[in-house]
Image 1 (tube, helix red, strand yellow):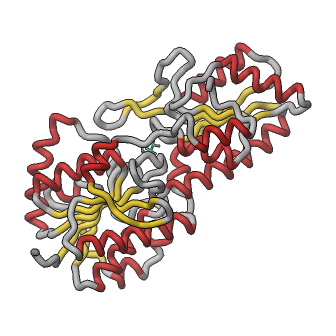
Image 2 (cartoon, protein in one colour):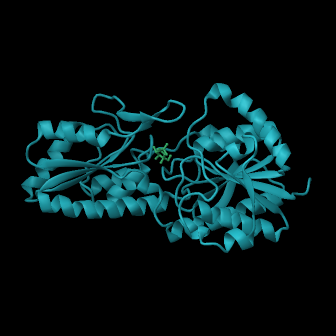
Image 3 (cartoon, protein in one colour):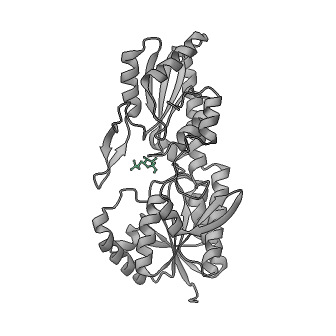
Length: 359
Ligand code: F6P
């Protein structure tokens, strides 16, 4: 087994709280083993672009700095998608970059999309790779938790609490749009915690009449305000995606469903005034919660242990209260994890009286 001397760490995809704690954990654990750590700049770009973007990370200059406590990615990240036709060409540049930098292994901190793309690139480069799941969407398969999700849930819940108060003052229904792409985890977790009245997620169809019924029921009880949480990936009632912008490779980025609901509900129901709020990128950048930092430190140290044992192409996971790992191929095969419409979160939301859709 080739002895590891130098590893690279990179963060890929949308940033989230806890990334710097992961980096800190990997640097500390790797330094103990006598390995050098290259922090790769801007996701895979630091490897594929010339000149390469990287810096040596040490306990002294990184772990002792304030960065491990902060959000964002110290190394920069990349969330602009990749055209599938350019994958082969980019993989070749990746292989050359890995060679130029003398990397024996790569730790990728990413979501489901990055796991797929970077695991392909690392296979072509014959470099070892361990993945660490992070995403506010919590849609990376097999692991029950990803770094960054818990902080985002806290942020959304606190926002719901605050917006409920202004809704109460003005007899309004606040429509709060949260991120999550095609998965409703962030929406349903924060809607339950924040005692929302309506929670729409992409996994469950809804009707505008169903929402209005719920609002009427609330008014009949004597309450003149309401909170509606909607996941950005929800479609219009007749199945169209609402999207206002595109990313750098022309893919649609979600956003705008709360305004659609605002317009439609305002037309059809006059019992309350509606206002819509999009929480946006603030969901990604709160102070990392203790839970996210802990997960980050556990995942980072475990990734280094796996590499030290000669493991390759695995992703660390949190499952049944334990840290372990699974083959990356299984993660890629499993695709995205969605909210189970018959699972405990939807069932609990319904039991609490939240309208979750036509289910
Ligand atoms: O995947 C993380 C995420 O924050 C999604 O919830 C959201 O749809 C997307 O990234 C936003 O991407 P961008 O950073 O390109 O605006």
